[in-house]
Image (cartoon, rainbow, N blue to C red):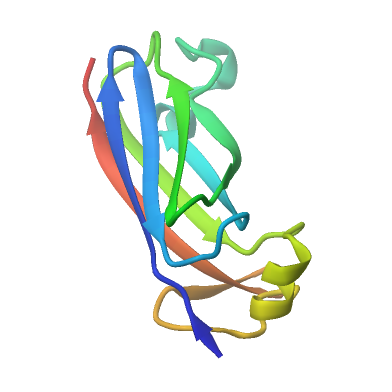
Length: 130
């Protein structure tokens, strides 16, 4: 069984949100991220001030780090939730061999079950200010 260290943080710079993290995953592994501004839960999408109040994607691990960038132009102030997960498929063959195709070899307090798979999940919440 393998425990995985996965830490996520954010940095805001001039209308850009940087999602950055550190991990002990090997180079080439992919982490999936979802970002949601609180307004996306309470306001119909056609009334959002920006089309990307919910954003998701993948980031590749390189030398213990992963990152991505989201344009926050027109985002209002409010709470933002970032969730990062590993190992949603597809993963490189060596990553899948080590952790399992469905995370079956993962262990630790940060492991949850998602759609029948074992997934390392971390959450980071912060207040977005313009």
